Structure formats: structure tokens, C-alpha cells
Image 1: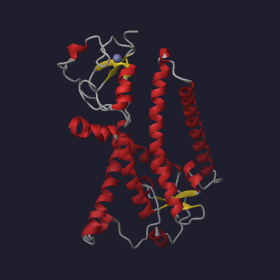
Image 2 (image 1 turned 60 degrees about the vertical axis):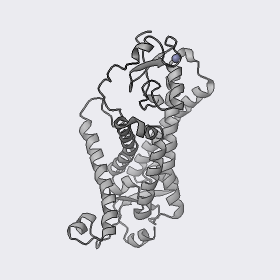
Image 3 (image 1 turned 90 degrees about the horizontal axis):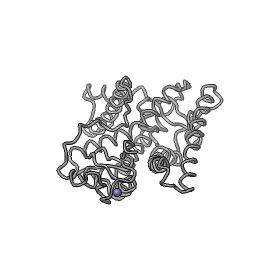
Image 4 (image 1 turned 45 degrees about the vertical axis):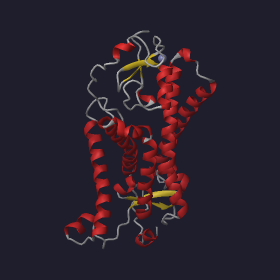
Length: 318
Ligand SMILES: [Zn+2]
């Protein structure tokens, strides 16, 4: 933080455009799906060794994201994505972040997104249950679904209003979290005498420690660039989403498949609300498989890693 005080000597009056603000938010929102996809890839390569990673991927991401954002906030006064777009956080009066701002920024960048992932997952399960008319979900779950939708619409509206206020110069805070923390984004103040990592590297001016730290930092930024490049590249493909699961070839017929023909492999009864687990291709009762996956994140027959939201309701027998 002290380094920022020293570096942040000249205030640049030019404000970042709304496109840069949105672009850095978009990059920030790609970090979790990219990590999630990486854990799925590892689990597919070696299910026995990495199935725990699928089960705890959100918690592992919480720790890694915490370390990443903490490092960037401490050294640059910006989140990883903000730094990537040449932005940094300052107070409304153009002062560097205080310790309280640093902690609040970490909560908004790391803790709240983690809680959002968990709540979104739970609400999504409630929605699936609610779609089955004869499961009769309770009032509490219905109220949670309503509150979740209401919050999302309200937050979207608040964000839109905040963009308009920023564009019309009636507020200097670009987003709702920045408004709550009384912070704003400005262009990163880089001292002119400090050469970039790549310039220093080619001039041979880096010590081994600087080289190691610089490579780590720049590799992350290069990875972020490729992540965004892939996202833009793939928008041309219909229905593509970075968060979608990879398309895998159908698995060969499992030797145990015959034993469960027409029956749920868990309760061994005929299916109630037939639901398929795509990773293995087995069909279960919806309550059986969801209850199982909440305890153990693997297919009960093949032991392939899976999560509750992977299940797909089958309607062909209705
Ligand atoms: Zn069953």
C-alpha cells in the first residue's frame, strides 16, 4: 500500500470509459468458470485423483482467488481484472486505498462472489424441484426463489442506474460495490521511469527474483488475454458459453448397465421422475440422485465426478 502512495503522485483526470469498466467485470466473471472447467478437465483425466477437486472446486477457487486479488490489491491497488485493463481503485478524493478499503475490496471481490455461487446453486436446485409439481416444495423454498429473483432484478437495475449516473457525471463510482465502498476506478498511475516487465526482460535488467515474480504475474495476464480471446472467438458459435460443460463423446456401454434396466440404480425401483446423469449416462429417480450427489460428488455406479446441478430431467416417459 505504501508503494501506491509513493507511486500515485500525479492524478490523471481522464476517467476510464464505461466499456473498460464493463470489460474488466467481464474478465473477472470468467475466472470462476475457467477454474471450474479446469477442475472438470483434471477429473476427466484422472477421476480417482481429482474427484475431490470437483467436490471442493468452489472452496479451492475461494482460496486461490483470495490470494490473487489480495496480491494485486496490495501491490497495485487494483483487482486482477482492473489491473489487466490498466485501472486502479482510489477513494472519492483520489487518495490510495486504506486498510479498511483493502479489506472491504477483498470481501466484494472474493467472499461475496463465493457466497453468490453457493446461493445460486441452491436456488437452482429449488427451481428444479419446483418444476416437479408433485414434489410440493415448502413455502420457505418458494420464498427463497422469489427473493433471489427479486434481488437479481434489483441489482441489475441498480447497476444500470449507476452506469447512467457515471456517464452523466452525477457520480464518480462506476458500479454498486464501488459506490458502497466510496471508491472509484481511475487509470493506473505508472511512473514513467519504471520500464515494463517485458522491456526490462529484453534489456537484461531483471534479477532472478524479479524475473520469477514478473513471469508469474505476466503469465496470469497472458492467460487472461487468451481466456477473453477464446470467449470472443467462440461467440460466433451458437449456444456456446464459457460456462457450458465440454461436449464429451458418449461413454461405451457399461458392463453393469444390464443390471439396472428400467430401474433406478440407487433404490432399485422403477424410476420416479427419471433423471439422467450425463457424465455416466445412467438414469435415476430425481430425489435419489440429488440426495446422493449432495453427499458424494460421484456417479453412484461409475464413480465419475458429478455435481447436483449436472442432472437432466427426462420427459420422454411422461
Ligand atoms: Zn430411486
